[in-house]
Length: 474
Image (cartoon, rainbow, N blue to C red; front, side):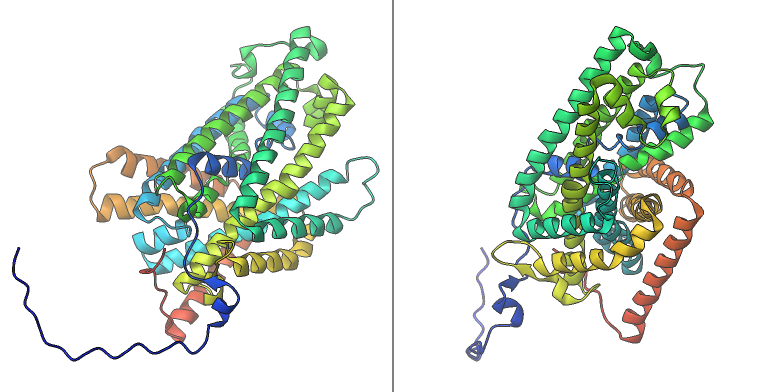
């Protein structure tokens, strides 16, 4: 070992004694970061709850009618389409492990400007999603006898208050609640599947267990199938929320990517099984055509009785209003925390509560924003609000695939043709197609949102010379 030279230097000055705690420290805040407590199983549970195992319930009839009676095939192809984006997540998470998700990948992998726009698009999705879940749950409650006269906003405020309290308590409370919720949703789902198959086997309502419910050449057309895939693919939007838990993963930076693949595979199996059972129970589509909005619940009543119809409705309310709403609040608070840490948002958002290992300030800001947006979103309706959210999600997924192409294939010049070139290209194509299938109003709102984000970025960085520091991103 080479001999080290001893250099005489003046003694270093004694460190100054701290005079007082910062306001953040005094309130129990810090920038120590998240606590790694989540296993791959925990993240899979979280993602399943965010995306809702019973998501096809309210849109089954629409998908059935659009797909000419082949909803199972539509959900299967929709899952495959989204798997390409999940693979792109699996590439980028280990390279830039951060709860900032696609915001960090594009900021570091391409440039800060595109990264800011990506984070801005993610906020469009995640800020709207909690209110969207509350509104959808409240609308379902109005269909239950005895509750139809309770104003939607009252239910939304109750859901918001509950999910905010749980989110502040930290991921420990969230995961416990998620596991209980997942068990309940699966029980209801399997109850319906069992009754639907029994009804089909008995031949009720012309039912029959047949693989024609998956693919029937006489019903198949590319145009109807493509429209149905675009519709049911939106049931898969949200798996990227797991990437916001990267810093809480005790399975390492590869954990979230693995969890996303499992989430899509499990959901695809559940969605397809449910649609197959429902189609076997009503192969002619008489119920779906007669009740295009609540056809699934009518079908549940036909195969299992009024109690099963009511059980499915209540399960949908709890899944959306409490569990998915909670997961959405948790995800957006993590994104705001990372954007606060980097300076892309006010620094106060990047403060962590030492006791709960939760960005409490970010959680409270999300709750306030949800409260402000609640009335406007109720006014525009849940369908339009859903497309606003989906524009943000699909656009950020498109940029994620672009990031893999630019950073891995072009800049790093890797030789992984399949993983770094073909898969992200296919992911870009699918995401782009799904964006184009949205209605014009979400396109207009989405473009305006992007322009506002670009203007804010230019003002902050050019006029005020504020530097967004991605170097210290956790």
